[in-house]
Amino acid sequence: ATMAATPSGPLRREQQRAASIVRVLALYRPLLDAYVIEFFAEDLWARLPPSWQAVLADAPAPQLAAALLEPPGPAATTTATATAVWPLSLLAFKATAQALAFPRAPLQRRHGHRHGHAGRPPEFRRNPCQSAGLHPLLRKHVKPKKQHEIRRLGKVVKRLSEAAGCDHVVDVGSGQGHLSRFLAFGLGLPVTAVEGDGRLVEATLIRAADPSKKRLGVQTVNKAHALSFPEYARLGLPRVGLDPAALPLDSEAVRSMLRQQQKVVAFFSLALLLAPLVETLILLDRLLYLREQGFQCALIPLFDPQFSPRNLVLVAAKCPLGPVLSALDEDSGEDEDSGEDEDAALPGGSPPGCPRAEPPTEGQNQG
Image (cartoon, one colour):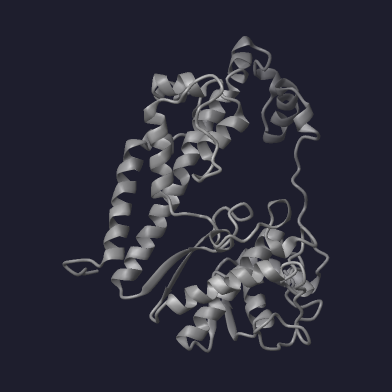
């Protein structure tokens, strides 16, 4: 697309952020391209600067996670370990990665609202597995994380539809229809759900016919956490068609690798620090394209990051977004204030501001 000769302030800042991220990712490309299965075969640890190796090799995993991955802020843990001060290059790596990534603090915390019980959003105060903001039929077979997401995203869609004068919503990539059902039966919006994956459509139809259908549990080695590595390997290798007798599971080489577990954790913690930058760059690419096409755009940390880590939502519209974003701030405050008392219903008790709608029956699309 053809851009104006002098980009606007927000557009120019976004372009500069994207360019900076590209430079950082190019500099640390070996970290991004590394796979955990190649740690020993490719001697990945040796690729780190010696000064980094010295402070990371023996750092306990909980301390490493707090010092390296904890978001910046007044309560952030110091990056000095108990035994050594981190080198300036490592501190700069962390600071750069965190400064360029989009902030993920949810709207509630930005405005000083307290968090819910045990790190969960306020809607889960009464029941950690059931959102008080959804009718029981709309949370049937829906995990708590997904309940939180469809409720928050549904409010965004409703606010956007009101601002744009939209009289019909199309949910592209609707999966098993959880969001579409909430939009239709919880918020009273006319919805068309479109899904291209036949397996998801089939799963929805099966559950509509027989809601008792459940997924099989993952079949793994029983009590694997209590086994030594050789014991676990002897039980697990036959499941993938390998003969454990043909492998030296008790060799000194294997024991030497097991003693380096902390190095594996440290190396891939560095890679995890870059993951938000990759996501930010992808979102920036989409946002810049939409801006160039004349859309009003915003990236919103809509979900609670402790509950739904990928919490950034790209919102775009031809109408002004200011009123929509202000309304979302108000919704966030209402969520906090009503988290304990709200128990959303459909007819006779719809969420505040939502029209009455006929509920689905027990056998209808409960996915």
